[in-house]
Every structure is written in C-alpha cells, then in structure tokens.
Image (cartoon, rainbow, N blue to C red):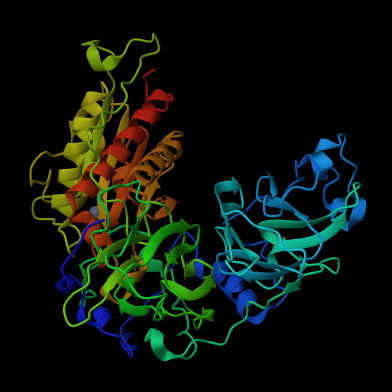
Length: 627
Ligand SMILES: [Zn+2]
C-alpha cells in the first residue's frame, strides 16, 4: 500500500464535504458503442434493495448461470427438501446434530447452500444486506450454548467468506458474505425442515439469481434491509439523476485518423491524477491504522467526490481501525473492524460511477459496500491508498478511486512471449529457419499527420507501442515489417499513404496489424474509454485475428473491453490482401484513459497483449500462406 501526502488528494475530497459534487460538471455515464450500458444492470438491484420490490435478479451479470441442483448429501432431493422432502441420510453419523454454527456448505454453479443444525432454544434474526446475509443468534435461558469463533474463506461459489463471532453476552453473529447485494427477498432463500433424527435444520441458499427470501417455515425473524436514506453527510447532490445522453451518434462509428473529421474541438475535461494504488497487481489491500482508540468509535459516512471520469470515496479511519478491501463483480466491499456505525443506505445514483453505498454493522465492526455502475475486477476499475493521520486531529483516510477506465498499470516484469512453434514442432524463436512468419505492424499516422491529440499525441504512442510489439514478437520467433519506424508518413496524400501501408503486406507477410489511439469530441469525451478492435471482411481470417488481438490486449491490461467492430470504410484494412485488424488501444480524450496512455507500464502491457494475440492467431493457423 502506497502512502501519499495529503496534498495528493484534491482538497474537495479531504475536508468533510457538504457538497463535493458540482452539478455543473459534465458527468457522462459509462456507455459504450457496443451496446453495453451498465446502468440498467445495477439499477434494478438497487431498486429491489431499496424498495423491497419483487424484482427478479435474473438479469444480474454477476452470476449469469441458473442455479443447479445442490450436491449436499443431505439434500439430494434439491428444492423439494426445502419443503420438507428431505431424505433420511444413510448413516447415523450424518444425522448427528452438530454444535450450532458449523454449517454444511454445498455449491452449484451459481448458488451456495448452507445447512445449519438448529439446537433447541435457538433464536435467530436474518438480515439481508448489501454484502451478504447476517444471522444474529441467541439462546433461550437455560439452553445456552457456547459458540466458537470461525472464519472460512470461500466456502462456496456464492459465499466469499463465512464468519462466526461469538457474543460475550451469549449467542453470536454469523456472516455469510456474498459477492452480490441481497435484497429483502432477492439473492437468497431460507427455510427450515425436520430431519429423520428429529432435529431441525435451517437451510440458507445464496445466489444472485435467486429470489424468495425466508419462507413460512422459518421460525426466526427477518430484519428489513430497507433503511432510511442517509442524510447529506455523503456530500452528494440530491434529486434524480440527469437523463442519459444518447450514445453512438453516427460520427462515433469510425476511429479517428481515417476520417476527414476535424480534430478535437472544444475543451477536453480536466484531468485529476488518479490514485497510484498498489504496485502489486494481485492487490487485496488490508491493514490496520496505527494507534489505538477507546472503545469502538462511530465511523463517519464516507465522503464522495466527483471528478471528470472518476469518483473518489474517502473514509476517515480512527486509530486502531482494521480494513480489508474486497472487489465484487459490481462493486467493492470494505470490511472495517474496531468501529461502529448504524445501518445506512445512501441515496441512489450518487455519481455516474457510484450507484450507492451502504453501512452494514456487525459484531466486529462495519461492512461498507460500494455498488458501482460498471464491472470491477481485481486489477481494474478501482484503486485505493491509505493516507496516514495528520496534524490537527486529522484521521487516517482510506481513499478509493472508482472509474471504468482505471486499467492495470502495474509493472509487467520480465515476461517473454511463448515461442511460436512451426507445424513440425520446432521453436521458431531459436531457429534461423526460412519459415519464420512475418507480420506487418502499422503504427497509425506519422509525419505531418499527428492523429488524435489529447493527453498524448497519437502518432507518438502508436510508434512506441508498435516497437514494443515488435520486440515481443521477435522473442517469439516472428519477424516484423514496420510500415514506419520514425515520425514519417509514406506519402503526402492520406489516401496514398494508407494504400502504401496496406500493400506492404501483400505477398510478403502473413498478418497486418494497425495500431491506433482513439478519441472523442470534447463534449462526449467521458463516454470514450477502453480498447476495441476493428476488422474488415477483406479476408476470411480477419475477424478471428481481431478477436485474438482484442482478447490479448484486454487480458494483459484489464482495460474496459469495447469489443470488436466490423467496418467497410477503413482503407488500411479494406486494401489489405492478408488478414488484417486495427486495434484502438485507448482514448487520449478521456481524463482517466489518457493517463493510461501516458503510463509506460500500460504501454508495455497493451503491447504484450497485442503481441500475444498476434502470436496466438499465427499459432492457430490464421496467417496467410503459413502453417
Ligand atoms: Zn488513428
């Protein structure tokens, strides 16, 4: 975890903000041309949560597969078991009622079932929260059982961890953490049934696509998740979200540089430096704030600051607070220990990046869930940093940036592309064999044609990346023909220039790959981020080549994938006689994606990804006249 001076954060994020979001700022939602709109996916979850409606979670992207039959030997009969059709288990041993708190877990593809033995006199309250299902348990007088603390990591596909925290005054609290938010009846089911030995079991099933909540057999009570809307302490404007702008105007459909559109007009959004985050790409940040506090102080609501293209969330952490950040498919969970808070749910649609946040208190502290408007991965969509306590009583702060354009910019390390093998099995990397394949790399633009200009100049970045791709390909035993290896153009006329580039591959190479940087007009700049690859039906293998490059580039950068696009109008592809693709490696016009393009680690990563896509395409037999 990096430690940064407080001055690294904009002042609006560091003071207890009353209103740190300027409604005047242009905050476009993350919408892309390929038709993916994150908003409608996350919104029903939130709506269901807030309103307790019967909305089905079937559309949730986190767990797309339908739950299948459980594999728990107790519950072979599947859903019927939950209605009392539980079969007698074959041996006496499996019928022994274990000490409470040791559930039997079983998982199907997209759901996990936990079966708890219910001792006599047990009382429980079920609370569905953003971050999972909580069970608060107590015992009737005279029937007290001592519970042992437990913590299981990933006991099932739909349960990220399970903890049992004994309450010193009797009973305890059980947390079944899920990577998706639960609603009053969404994301979970619970039922009780008797088993052959005469005991009773509580069956809890968790899965993003489930709905139903607790059925009438449940003897415990269910605490409503709906909480009053939080006050203005989050510092975010109120009222309904602005209407969505219409995406995909006709002019967006072509990458720049091959159109005659004028260069960027207007003023691009201001750039806020994103948090550096951890240098470790397998980041799972956790830690403890130094010092020790008295008791469990009340945790203040997080401050939410809106910057162009990203939202910054800052949490003040009293001394002694422990924290652990866990990425969820559509958000982040921050488990905090040693602090207290009441259950809170923020307003909906806080910013284009942040749908909402919630506090879910538990026996060890508080779980803060941030619901994002776009998918999160371990390596992308967020960064965090712990800022130490300062003078004048300034608490330590955990700052988190969330933006769909935050890609993986951690160093690659020394990673060599796997050598290409010829059809006879020899590794071409180490042979001077005449059958080493050749690839044309085309760094877009050059000379008097700079391409897109924003945080970077396109012609400079495309050449820098093409040179990296060449080095990676050479390592794998693939020769490269560059259309240019300097700041030049091939002809004064754009049409002639593109034709000459395309013809360099004819009869001389197996694949043609053009590298470009994308941009949007200033008034739409926040809508453009991520990687996309274009192809033309000039050759039957072009689409598969584009897919391989897109897959490779997204895998190494964890960047937002805008997918593949088919075009008839890109001359450099249309005029190519061999399989050809054009990759757009990012947007110079986006305040966060532009920072990626300025980062040499990102350029290393995207180059390695493009090279691995080319290598895989050749190995898969997509090259013209080469096996
Ligand atoms: Zn271009």
